[in-house]
Image 1 (cartoon, rainbow, N blue to C red):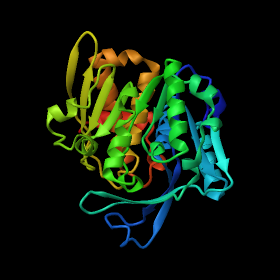
Image 2 (image 1 turned 30 degrees about the vertical axis):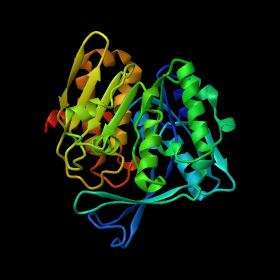
Image 3 (image 1 turned 60 degrees about the vertical axis):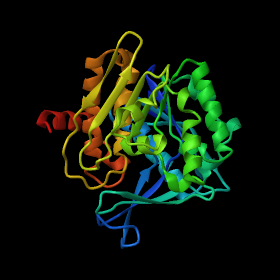
Length: 340
């Protein structure tokens, strides 16, 4: 592992994971269990799913880089400095003088549901163009990771497609976490169509049970609905349980020589804020995949990696914000040792 902040050295690693997309400021209520309207004060925290994943990878000893665009403002420069401080390579980061850095207000209400309110009209991340892409950074990766928010509007959508084509042409594994945020899309149908438009380009996909229900318009607990998201060429499909107070991972993995599926139990913790839990889960799994992609063909290795990922996701819920709550390797192993 490169020293904290030595992001340039980290990006020379053969196990580099490049995350593409948005990074923003999350404002989280200072009192848990209230709606955004009820909240009297907010805590500022860095966020954005692809950036959270990049920071999680670095914090867990992996090598990561982030590719995206920020406003040339106080928040934008603060976020890029946070990436650097967390050991994430930032050579793919750009600043836009004509747009602001995105903001989001997010809370976990008493019923366990998260509530989002976004300020991006448009934000700088939406204005990244294909010509601005650092294609060399992508080609140096072992894994290229992305979400779906970058598909919502042009020119970022075209940049996303070009980045993905570059990764696939170079034989790089593509990791997709749709991270559905309906308030950002014109409609539910537009979201569903947009998210599924690149579905079959991925090697690895992680979705929540809520997202399965949304994408299939069916019961996420029905295995047929989950399996309808499988396609030939996909190496791994993971569905995480949506209960914010216990991370339970459903594993579906089909490979050429054998089929297997099953579940890996999660861990009970004192949940404060679920923001970033799925990103901690994904980042921890990508660390292991980057080190040894035989995990796609070895059920024992995969289950061990998922146990670790469940612990990372659970720990992330015990603090406010996403990046500040990302776990260390030691903390994850400590939770695993304690059991459920």
